[in-house]
Amino acid sequence: MAEAYIVDAVRTAGGRRNGRLSRKHPADLGGMVIDALLDRTGVDPAKVDDVVYGCVSQIGPQTFNVARTSILSSKLPESVPGVSIDRQCGSSQQAIHFAAQAVLSGTQDLVIAGGVESMSQVPIGSPMAKAMDLGTPFAGEISKRYPNETFSQFVGAERMAAKYGVTREELARFAYNSHVHGAAATKAGKFKDEIIPVDVEMEDGTTLVHDTDEGIRWEPDYDAMLGLDPIQEGGVISAAFASQICDGASAVLVASEKAVKEYGLTPLARVHTMAVVGSDPTMVLEGPIPATEKVLEKSGLSMADMDLYEVNEAFGSVPLAWAKALGADLEKLNVNGGAQALGHPLGATGAKLAGTLIYELRRRGGRYGLLAICEGLGTANATIFEII
Image (cartoon, rainbow, N blue to C red):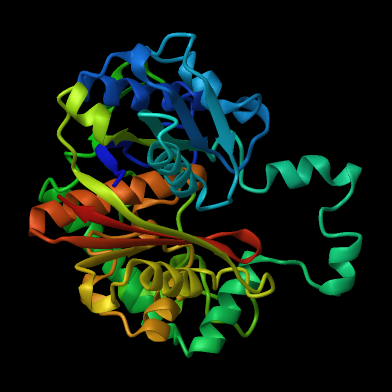
């Protein structure tokens, strides 16, 4: 039986908006994680069959196929192709799926999957804002099928909280814990396996090594989070319960069994089962629930079999609603903090979370981990990784 192995996983530490990574070109960030994989695994760069990169805002410095520009900014030879994909916030998780599918099909043996997003240089929503003079994507037949809908993630976050009974107090506690767990994991060195150091030139000409997620609140204030005004009048979602704008890149090396043997590689995990679904686009962020149900059904496993889960904290209401719907154990959820503390670099988040999940499973001696990410217009990916 064919297998798709995760041989290594790396990421940059998250950079805050207009922070340490804000002046790094996204293609350079993308090239850095590629080079780190090559250096750490010793793989011959010419043997890489493809690079699949996720990126949500493919405009400006992230346009013209950022996977290819990242390749040309790295140690990879010109002969290596690349393709950029957009499945919204799950883009680099989908990149892993495409890479694994290529390996499982036998058509490729070594594929780098990952993503990059400079949200400082290319703010969220930039493609929509720049293109509005050409027309909205929600006109035509879609406007007839879903009249008066804006498909807003902020509205979706509120709808998730309302539908699944997520309270403001639960949101505040979850956000608080995200920072507490992120700070504790950082202090314990839990991210050292995945984070690659990035030299950053400061305004005064000195050089700083960026190797720590920049958005963590080291002493979070629960009461302040609870008291912050909601984004929408009468709602429960505030800025404290949303993912942080973040710059960063991430990548994993996916290898076939043949490549593992031929190049003497040591896998970290295998891609056990993959699923992707569409769900109600007016809920926007509900997809991880049916995606998880589908991937568990396909795998023959249950929630009880999962040792850990990573569900992206686009908004706190998403993983909390997911946990309520599926009866998940909150003690297994985002145990090293999530996007509310560590940041959500859009197209890079999927591969980032995959690495975090795999390394923590290995530390704990766990076997199965589940990754699920909500995506714009109601789609979602879910992946089960198995430690070997």
